Length: 139
Image (tube, rainbow, N blue to C red; front, side):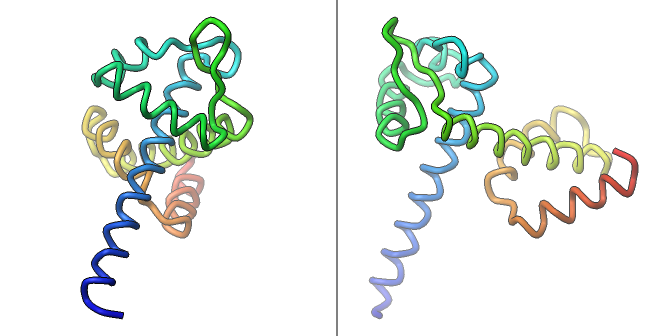
């Protein structure tokens, strides 16, 4: 494999990883906003994420294609079972990372910000070690 092919593969993986992060962020926010039981309007997602309505619509199109959301009859979106499962898993990782950072003494606002990024990149082994540490320390 040439250097250019390796580099191309690396960039494809990074783009794929970012797409998963975005899907996790959207499904998690949809879950928070009630998107399993009541439709969430794209404009409300745009406000919460601080992005344009067009950006949200493009992302929702990908999430729908991937079976994570469905569009409701009143122009809102709902999580599918797969989307709900993704949201729950992402939220659980987020909570573990956040609690771990707080246990280390990281200030609340910093822990909230850092957990948002780390939750997408933490390995299962590291997450399990964090969970075990928190359980031993009575969290």
